[in-house]
Image 1 (cartoon, one colour):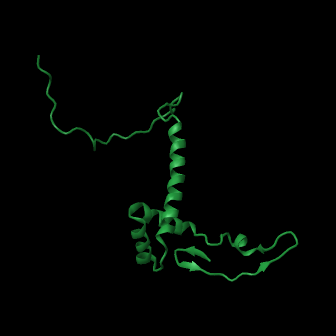
Image 2: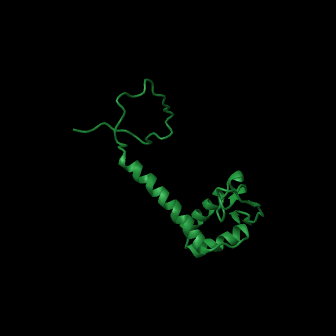
Length: 128
């Protein structure tokens, strides 16, 4: 069984036996799924809903939006997995210096001054 935004997808497959392996499953690798896995789109839905509300409420939103039930623990697992990946990416970026300007700037700078954000009002000369 494999999960996607349409619900559980059940596929009957033939399991092969070889002398080297007790069983050989060719279908999951051929179509790019894992047994009891979830599609990338469903992972995104679960993590989006899971970070906005409680995991139980997120599971209820899946029923509301997609019409099938999924456990709150599945929402929790997907949300925490992707939050961990995001944390690793942010920590990696935080270690890099972002305040250093390049040694040489651009040869030409293209800018527009149409006055849209200019100061409106009167200017008076300073006294004294």
